[in-house]
Length: 400
Image (tube, rainbow, N blue to C red; front, top):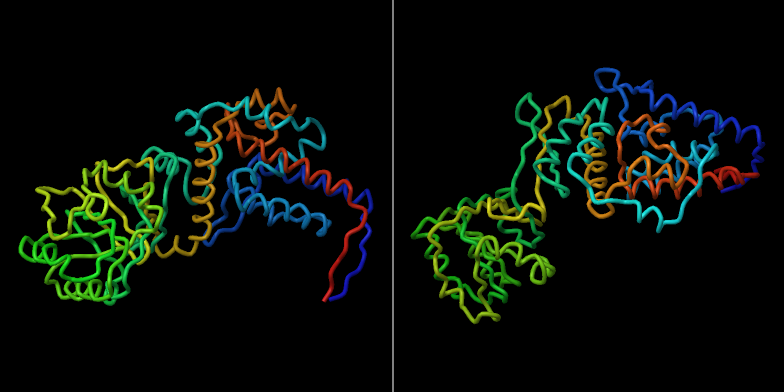
């Protein structure tokens, strides 16, 4: 691979910033569009990253330098990546970068109404997931959501909210010999903090499942293959419904209480000295369980949804072709909410007082507050990117 030196004239840098300013003006005035699969679509603020990737700059080398900076930010804060081009453009003309401590001090705890306002503004004009859709997801799930994007069996798109909690588990492949997942309704949940060595240890549970037509999920620290195979074969034959799963190690330290306490489950095993063959059948259970190869999803009104909530997005044939764009929107949404939950919000006025940059004026947004982490991180990255571009004298071009 050969390399050659490419000199960058000052006029090329000036032209690049003129084009960047044009991009920002077109983006914030909603003049930028893209060709969807069936129609011309507007570009939302939340889709700034995708929009600038498609924008034509005269100097490809400086453009690549900018995009590399945006891509590194996109990987951990898509929201900050959307603010970055606007803040680079603003910082070149005015403003300064305050200390992190000053920005942190100006941040405030998030308010529900302000978050809805931000979602409405940042996803306005979106052609796929609309701002009202994301507001509804936030209202139902709070700050933490897990999303599944699936193909719909009908011509309709749908959003299914599943109240519950998911935990990571290992399950024996025999359970999925003839099925992709296992559904257990009104299941008895048995938590055993030990290793199940022999089938005799769960004879009572197997018999209860068969005699009482009851489903069981046993969470253990491991089980012998003979135990797992016996349960899997009986489940497949429909004789009894007992599934044994091994949760990830963190379950036994932290997550166990988030499952056992609200569901009022007693623990069996070494800590309590209670054997599985002394299991007492619970009179009623409102817990439904969806078991996948690496995850178990509990559904019950008793569970604390601040830990985790899952939403399934069902797409028809036409929308399925756009699933990558929807995934990007959901990633932006989830990441921004988690950073708001951690770092809070900062008012547009406070940010302007500290930096001299009016975010609303630069971006075209009309919100009283912004995600504190996103705008603060974007301003820091804008300073770095601006200095890189202004100091470019030569670029090294690699040629094959």
